[in-house]
Structure formats: structure tokens, C-alpha cells
Image 1: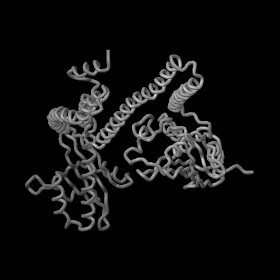
Image 2: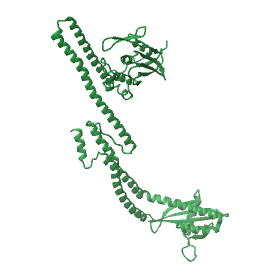
Image 3: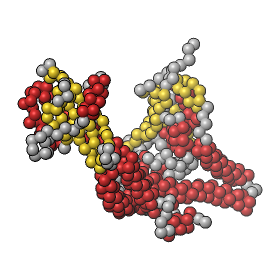
Image 4: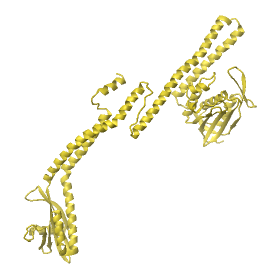
Length: 498
């Protein structure tokens, strides 16, 4: 089953459990369920304890304020105590050192008779506990002896005022926790139903909105995979997806360029192979049918066949070199004198003492080329010497081929920011800004415009591969009608100690 059919099969599914939309919806619902589960767990496990603790802390705080106020104002503070008791639903009693009840607040009898909340035995037992406590204070939760579901907070404290001992006792009802729990549970159940309903609707909407741009990108990617390089990836307003769409658009443009380059490559290779093969065939037939007995003519025509065969060999060899460069990045790096290597390569170009170089052009004539150079000595680098030598040969030979009417190229080697920099200048036709980025491509249209008949169009592609494998800085500075400057830089290393 092909990838396309698998995609179509997934689209026909009503619900794709592996799809992004379903998973966004599912995890959003799962998150909501977890939050609701925590709420229910808190309701049935922690509510009673939490509520009792908070109520006990409130009673302790209020009673301490009452004690502090009575120690400050005495009986004049009784009105404030009554207000405290009424507002907070508490019963407050005060006893003197002999156990006499001084007051109880609030007084709900309506007759003005003070209500005693403790029996004598209970008062004595509480007083004993208070005196045995380090803080002279007790605050706890107790159940009603008549109704265990009715619980309350009790507070007791012993304090001194005006040289006498007093005991404060307070009681605050917690009410029926079970009844409260039932009420809260019913409210929580209603909240749960509403929350889940909203979660289903909202998660469905969010999953659709979040997955829609990715689905569109996936569809565009399928068009791209089928060879449609006109497709465009649209962003969605989300930063990550916008960055992804920009990256995919850039990749599409590069793939389109590579496809164009591939077509040019096939066309150019076909042309470059066809021409010498046609010539070889024509001259071979000519020798066979006409000039076979004419030695001078035969030798001349055989030279043409040999030259064309050499050209075919060079083309095939350079194609093999490009393939090797792309299939392996292995480098045999050593420390060597870069300045010395440049001088060695220049000498191999057969410059004589007067600074002239002879080469053949298309007619076979010898043309003198002037090559002034400025090479700083003693610049050492760590690189693959053989491959860097290839780069130097290519740059210098190209400069010679494309030199201007002054028949001059200039070679400069210098130190630049911790690197050894090589420049070769020519004063030829130059290369436009638009075409400079294409000259490094094998058989590119730009390079076709600037290559001679004896060029294969692969040299700069090989150079680029070598320099990239060295992480070298390289490029070209050129202007139409003014010439070009091809350069590259390699990091310097310390020269060996003598």
C-alpha cells in the first residue's frame, strides 16, 4: 500500500485516534477530568479536617483578642466581648480564681440570668489541663454527647489581670459537617456537569483551530512530495507554525532550484558528451572514407580525435571527483606552510622570471599573461594539503581564462583576522550580483555563461565542496565590466618550532 493510499484511508476515518485534532481534544478533556477529580477528592477526604482546622484557628485568634482586651480594660471590655460573641456565633464565659462565673455572653435567656456552660467538675478538669499546658491554653474540636454529628470548637485559657487569676472558656459550633458536605456535593455535581459540557465544546473548538494550519501544511507537503514546487505554506499567527511555514517555503524554493539545476545538469552533460562524440565519430568516418591514405591529413584528424577523447576523459573524471566529494567528508589534515604551497602552485603554472604565463586559447595561439603577486611568508594552516592545492589550481586557472584585455591577474596572500587569506584578481567581464550565487553549482546556467570551450563547468562545484568540508570562509567579489576577486580563508596555526 502506497503512502498516498494510507493518507487517504486516514482521512476517511470518522475519528483518527492518532490524529493531532483528536489528541488535542482528548488531552484537554483528560486535563479537565483530572481537575474535577482533585476537587471531588478534596471534597470527601480533606473537607472536614480542613474546615475544622480553619474554624479552630479563627476561634483561637478571636479568644486571644478577647483575653488581651480584658487584660487592658477589665470589666469595661464586657460590651466588646458580647459583640465578638454575637458576630462570630460563640458562647464566651469568664470565671475568677475561685471558680465563680463572672459573665456569659451572649445571654439568650432574656431574663438577665447568666448561663453557665460548664459544670463544676468540667470547670475544674479544664482548669487543671490549662495549668498543665505550657501556654496555659487549650483549643480543640469535640463532638456533642447528644448528637455526634454536631461538633464544636472549645477554647480555654488561664490569664492574670490586676493580680488575680481568671479563666476564659469559649465554645463555637461547627454545625453538621455531613449536612454541609451533602450541600457542597450537590453543588459540585452541578459544577462538574457544566464544566464537562463546556470542556467538550471548548476542546473541540480549540483542537480544530490548533490542528487546522498543520493539516493544511500536511496537504501542501503532499503536493510538494508529488513534485508541485509552486505550492506555498501559509502560517497561522502562531510563532512556531509561522517559523515552520517560512522554513518549508525556503525548502520548497531550494528544491525547485535543485530540480532546475538537475534538469540543466542532464541537458548540459548530454550536450557536453554529444559534441565530442559527434566530432570523434565524424573524424573517424572521414579518416576511414577519405583521408586514410593521406598521412598528414590523417595525423591532423587523429589529433582532433585524441583531443576530444581527452576532453571526454576530463569531464568524466571531474564528475567522479564531484561524486567522491559528495559521498565522503574524510580529510587528511596536516599542518603545512600555506604561503609555500601557493608559490608551489604558481610555479606549476609555468610562470617565467619576467612574470609571464603562456596558455592556449581556442585557436591554439599562445597568449602572455602578466601575474604580479604579493605573498606573505610563513603563514601556516591545518588542512588537507592536496585538496587545498586543487582549490588553488582552480581559482588561478579560472582567473587566467577570464582575464581582461590587460592580460593580467593578481595573486595576494595575507593574514586577515587570525586566518590566511588567498585572493586572485582578474580584470575580465565580471559576474553580476544575481548570478554570483549560482556559479558554485555544477553545470549552472550562470557558470555556463562564463566558461570557455575547454571547461567542464564542474570546477567551482568541486571547490565549494572542498572548502565547505574545511569550514572555510570563501566567496567572490565581482562587478560587471570590472573583473572578479575569488578568495578563501583558512584559520592560522602556530608554525613548528625549529
